[in-house]
Image: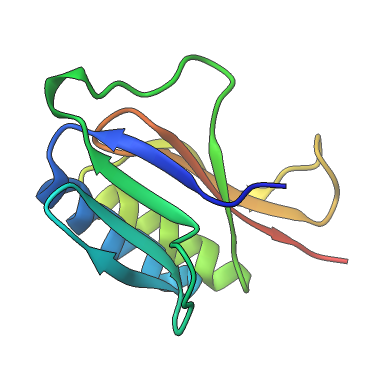
Length: 127
């Protein structure tokens, strides 16, 4: 359904440091960088980066209530490491790793806000 998602950030270097750290446990790497943006995706991905952060300066603001970006995680450990890396790099806890029974008994996820206020999730759908 989507080709790619990009989020505006106030400080590209700070945001890239945050996303480098918290996306690595999920298996996503920095695919490209230019003066205006940094793109991420699975290692070896050759098309346009499926996720990007874009320098927006002081006008960068996280979207309103209800919006978030959920990244697929390969394991519970990856969800845990995503959460820890996010908090260790300026993120804010929005929900620690754990099962979300209200979604599904096999829905293991964690939630954070990045330094620009974007709400992020790492999720593993267990059978």
